[in-house]
Each structure stands twice: as structure tokens, then as C-alpha cells.
Length: 364
Image 1 (tube, rainbow, N blue to C red):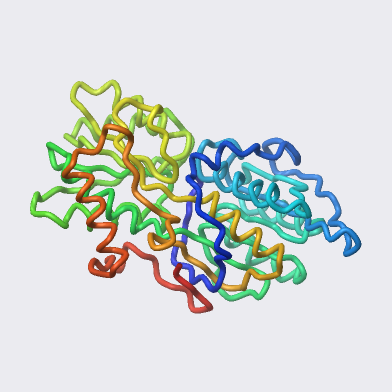
Image 2 (cartoon, rainbow, N blue to C red):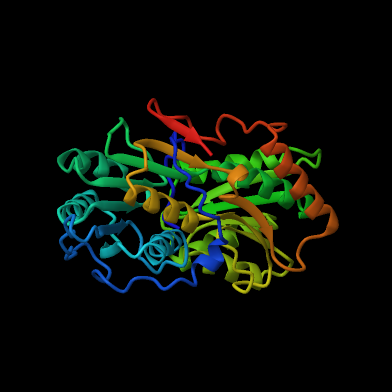
């Protein structure tokens, strides 16, 4: 899922009590078929004026819109907001833009024709910082990253994935026979570091001496690279792998399924137990609900500038087991650690939750 990068955003006021539905369920929403296909060009429709009160929305992402992960979940959330509020319209989608010039061009195109622009992905933070001041009447929603400085028309929304990672580490450590755990991600961005350091802290909650190694493939969607990286981990004795990838996770499932001994796999963001026979569970992040909430609030003029972070207390992040994969002890441990984190009995290490920005922040 394209990566949530700078995850330390301070989130100010947002939540309008929209119920958090499961990320997997959110994917059943019909994704908008408007906008461009993969690429950096888009034809934005003009925002409708006050007479109709239509709020036009543009969506830009660093990954393909159908990546089966972070981007697709986020887009489903935007569409859920539109389905619930008929005056909202998704006019344009610009996806799969990776370099800075494409990102700036895409943002400018969307900002010129929309009231709200959703910038979905960590690598878009610098482009938003450049473009947002030129369009002061447009509300920018930056997902999974934050800007270097405060802008009164930008709201960063993020998920505190480090909490999920602690639970994953505790569960994986308990179920692992070799006590060698792995975390595999695409890019070495702060959000992926949160998954790693959270696993380390979670694995250290008992006295098993479990160790966690990390590998970055440089790509969240390359199945071949992911498979090779997973195979290399397995060759060193790793028997539990957290896959912080998008469609590249297929390579991890393939390596696990082909291994001579059982290799447990843990997903992030969504839970798809049919994707591989050894999937234990997922550190679910409900990006769909987060995006639905933020877009709805922005359209109503109730989304404050600054940064908002969603965590365990609101259900935006939650560890979930696949059916039949939770031993009684593992289920009890997951529930216990979750309650301890919510109750502040366990304090995430400094490198698990990213530093807060210097501007307005709210943890939810």
C-alpha cells in the first residue's frame, strides 16, 4: 500500500462519528470509474458553483488505484463519502505518479478544477507543500505523511500503525518456533520503520528472545522482488514474516507456501485470509474509514488544518486473526496487549510512533 511515510502527524479535530467499518468490507464499494487511467494526466471537471452546492473532489496517488492495498482502500473511502452524500463528486483520478514533477503537475491540474484534493501517499508530501499555497481556496487532504510546515488549507491524516505492529510482534513471537521474525517492506519510510520497531517492541514483551530482521525491496508492487526477499529471510531461519507491501505481498505468500516448513505471514492494512495458506492475521488499518471521515468533514467545512492521527482507541487500527488461526493463548495475548496499549499500560517506544510535527496535532 504505497506507503504511509511520515507518520507523526498531529491531527487536530476531525472525527465526525462516522462508524469504522472493516477495511475489507469497504473494498466492496464500487470504485469510481471516472478520471484517467494509470498515468499522470487528468481531465478535471470544473467544480460546480454555489447554486448546486456540488463539491468536486480530485484524487492523486503514488501507486495504481487498483493496487489491492493502501491506495485502493483509500479510494474506497472517498467513494463511500460520495455515496453517503449526494452533493459530492469524484471528478478526476491521477494515479501511479512517482516522480516529483508528475506529482506537482497532477496536483496543479486537480487543484485548478476541484474544491478538495486528496493526495494519497507519503511521497506526495513535498509536492503538496509546493502546490497548496498557490490554491488557498482548495482543501488538500494529505494521507500518511505530513508537510514540513503548517498550511491553513492542508490537513494530514494518518494511522498510528506502530500500535498494530506491537500487537503483531507479540503474537508472532508467541507462535514462532525459531523465534526469528521478519518485516518486509518496499521503501524505508517512517511508517514502515514504525512497523519494524513496533514488532521489535512487541516481540520483546516476553522472554523468548525473539529477534526481528527487516528487508526493503525498493518497490511495494514487485512480486518477484518480494518473493526473493522472503525466500532469503526463510533461508536464514525466519518463520514469521510481516508483509508491509501492496500487490508485492503475493511474492511473500508464494515463498511461504513453497517453504519446506511452515512460515507464518502477517498482513497490514487489510485482511485477506484466502491470499495464502499460512496467513495468520493482519494489523488492519481502516484507511477507508479514515478517508471517508476526512472527506466528509472537508466537504462540510469542518476539517481543521494541521494533522490528525487515528489509533487503537477509535478502532482505526486493530489486529485481526484469520478464522481458525488464533490459538487461545495467542488470542488472549492479542487482546491483553491491545487493552494495555489503549490504557497506556504499555508505552510505545520513541521510534515506534513518529515525532509529532511542530504544528496543530490531535491523536484520536
